[in-house]
Each structure stands twice: as C-alpha cells, then as structure tokens.
Length: 232
Image (cartoon, rainbow, N blue to C red; front, side, top):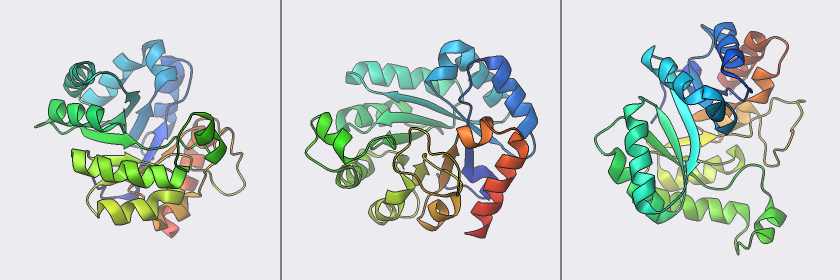
C-alpha cells in the first residue's frame, strides 16, 4: 500500500486516554493530518466506535491491535474489522496467524501489517524472552515470512526499513513507528530514527504519536514533521 503524498504517509497515533481528547486532537490537526492510528489505550476507552466514525467520514484509520491467537479466532476478528472500514490492521508476524488473516481479508481493501519486532525492544530484550535472533535478524526473517503469507505490509523500525525494502520490494507498505524528530525525547523507544532518515530508508508510512499529541501546538508539530519528511 503505497501513499501518494507525504500527508498520506504520516500516521499520527492517537495515544490519548479518552475519545474526547482524541476528537480534540483530530480537530486541531484538520487539514494537516489525514491518517490516524488507534491502539489499545484509546480502543479500550470507546475508541473502536470512534474509529468507525472517522472511517465513515473518509479519514484513514490504522487499527493497531497486534492480533495473535489460534487461526480461527484471528480470522473471525479480521472479518469484523474489515466491516469497520479500517485502512490498516496489525497482526503479529507468526506465519499461521498471518495466513489466516490474509484469507479472512481477501477481496477487501484492508491492508494487513505484520508486526516484526517492537521498536521498544533491543538485543537484551530478545534474549530475555528466549529468541535466538537479534532484532535485525528476526525483522528480516519475519519480513520474508510476511511476504510469502501475502501480507500488505511490515511494521519495523526505520533503522531496518532499508533492508526490509530490499526483501519485500517496492509495492508492500513498510510502516515505521519509533519516529522521533531530532532532539526530542525517545521515551520508551530504543530503535528510533528521525522522519527524514525514515523516508530515505524506504519507509512508506511513518507512525508518530507522542511528539505530536503531547506537543503544546499539535498542528505545528505535525507540520514540522511533514516538512522534514519532504526534505528527505
């Protein structure tokens, strides 16, 4: 899923505690941002209905649910998410789960994204949970598996986007969270990249949450990120 303009390539994460605050953010960003991510925090505070509302009005919504379960459960979840009119949905990059999701979404416009390795994880985190691969190696392995499963895109750190792009080719979405403008606080993210570098590395979409929604001037923060993306 390749976007046509930089505005379509910027996805702002509505990482806020209430739908009221999310509505305020969308109003403030009107005309600058046209694509939003809704994850656990907002989803469990009425955000799923809000996601439907945004989608019905023509706004693109990335539903970040990171689904993982037995095949049947994943498939039935995806079938209902298709009906919601979402643009993107995340699935953990386990081959059986991905294949079940792809089959359930077949014929729809929903872009299924394979979550490779969370950008909050580094090599020690991988060791702690029992993986034999370092983050970079596992991202590339899961990218190959996602491509073979027929997924629409990969979620990875922008630090790995160039290598992932070489594996998946030009047409699959490479969606990169962990984006931080130069000089900003990294928070709990460990594998971070600036907006311009993410674009240069081959990312199709950039996911930016706190640097925009926690800014005193959200509109200016989003515009600055777009300007940096365009300078790449």
